[in-house]
Image (cartoon, rainbow, N blue to C red; front, side, top):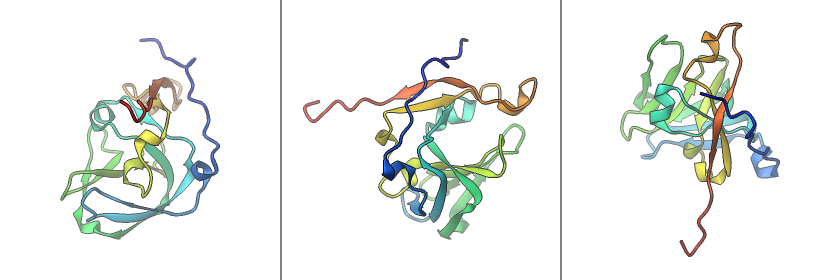
Length: 161
């Protein structure tokens, strides 16, 4: 499979997207609620094509490990781990929505589901890079290296669609 590194998504520079002020987030049913300070604002959304992310389908942004605080519903969070059991994927045990995960590639980072952030939708992003995760960066010869497998694009069909 050839990597589509020649199709980068344009950078997002809108002031709303670059804001790193704390944001509120919640799962679908509202049982799990949190605040988070995003390390890069909403400027670096991503997806992954590993077996789990392909099925989960979430667009994520980055927060530092200590910059997410569960404000209610911590008891409803369920942890899912697979394979190396290094990554920690959290979801609400009531509604099943994935809220965030601790990354295997950088355990000091969290991936935060943008759909859980107040006022944000995965469809706010025209283009989201998809990181190569079938062979995890930590498992590649020569050590961690991020590669782009492709890009996921969203085109609004407009009001008449």
